Length: 523
DNA sequence: TTAGGGTTAG
Image (cartoon, rainbow, N blue to C red; front, side, top):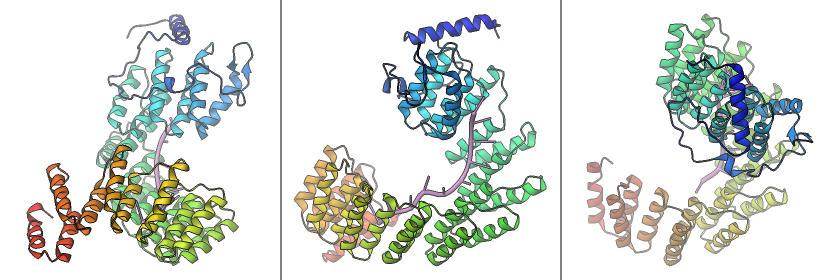
């Protein structure tokens, strides 16, 4: 490796910084053997004129309009933990940092990238990382770990692994955090087997001593893929290796068990962890309440709400929304509304999901008037209904054959700044076909495509059903054939729609014919 | 200055 003196490096860095300020980026000193394919350039998207957005947050050096160094350190430390309010704020700060002389340290730049990572602006972090390199700033192992984390969250764990070579080039050694991040990246891409291989290799070779986070990561990966038995096995073995399992590891397994509908096993694990002085937290209880509700065991879920409060773990809006949803699905909208009142008394503010859920609950009971009342009351409480709330109510009207009211709501949405989704169109199309308004449905379908919405699986089901129900079986069959030709192989539901219609229309031969082809199609 | 668990409304 070529030796470069410190003085030469400093002078090179200053030159780069000066050029950067002039808008010149000359050198590409990036050692990576991979190419980034991200089109987003944050430097073009915000603050092109270097306008200062930070007047109220950091005082500036009056001569240079640059932040005070001590305040910058404090500010960045806080933002790296909490994230920035807005992306533009972070980018503006970055622009100001690169104008400082001398430049802030790599630690401050890493903190800025961490803050952006917390806000999930992963591709922005990668772009800024490249800018930092172009400025000649030598990144450190922490910065590389942040980069790997962002690549993993963008489902590019392969690029994450290729960053490992940069560690060695820069004289760093990947640490346990590096491997934890990569293992998590593998799990995010459903490669838990690979993560497990890496875990076993690291343990076998003894180069890296797994820590609590590594055990937590692998236990989570196993639990997510239905391997809760292996995950529990690791949990038990950890004690032999003098590691005390923590609440995170237990929560991961409890969630896995709940998703596998093994809620009783999850409840046993709750007892076991408590016996071992591992205190369950809000996530433990929310996971269990969700698991119980999914199985319709809402009474036990309600008891758990009391238990957690007794243990000074206080429910949040998610806890209540989960319970309200379960009660609504049981047809107990009135009781769900009592839960809403209870949460308000407890100082937990209902959100748009709470009201949306309750709206749906009343619709399920056929009480459209109450559903509308809940929908409208949301606005009185200062909560703006979102697209999902509109979809629920439009669906309610359509199912009750009140197409005019549904259409009024549909037309109201753009006035509220909401754009209909493919679900909204599918619901409206179903409603229109339901009342026999085929031509309006066709018009809406055209409008939908003109607005850039592509028909999805449900659209085709609605069209097949709507056309055949309205005596337009030939057009339905034509669509069916088109789907077959275009490679969207009609599934069993689509076949059933047609078979059902043939039967109802007395066309039994056609029904039998289509039915007879099912097994040959693997259905 | 870096890494792990729950995310609820058809």
